[in-house]
Length: 289
Image 1 (cartoon, rainbow, N blue to C red):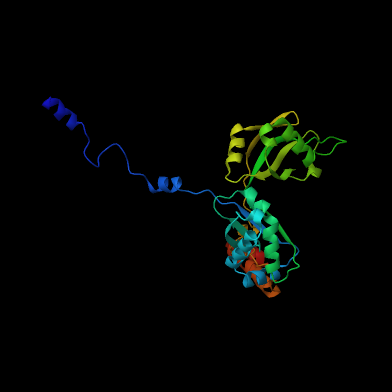
Image 2: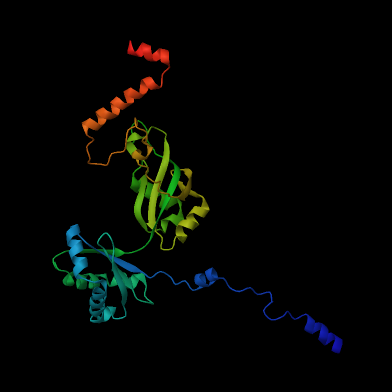
């Protein structure tokens, strides 16, 4: 009995040296990550950049939060709606962020109350306001799609592409489309029986919808099986970055700055003077003669 107890005691790992590992900081932050709160984008329609700057200078976001919450409390239907914060964007839009335990549907339902309260607070009360839910979008690229172009028929329209995609793909039909499918190039340059790519944009708050669609690899339209992938914006390369840097090479000139004629003449003469030096002695005499 004593030997068995000693053997069982020996099998117990020392304190601090068990099989469990300390949780990493990344795992802890991932577990405690809170969902992104729904928000509403309020924009000033038909207003200039100067008006935006004046409004932002005169109205702090915190004061607009107070105005919105006071208006919501006075409306019994939206008394349970609460605004936690607001912020101005570089484009002059106001982002209104909902409080805890609220859905985007509740926030959108109270849009009229919020925009009316904000409108009466603006320096120009007559300025009209436009608002929409601040939801992240995803963009997909649909490859190898028949354009439908022949000698008498133009390319498929965006409406026709949307209709056939929703008809042949049930998962696509449930998407909230923000921009209808459009061709990546101008339809007027297509040739008969050609194939090209479409771009489509839809609401995707956390990116999971796009991931699930891309995982299926295919979408069906116009009796074809088209491949899909995420759209990636190609960076624009400036033409000036390819210009030479030598004394005889064209130099990058800032936009709006004219190149003096004297500088051009000096550069041309210096290039002509360098030419004989690069030639042999016999060729130099021939050039001078």
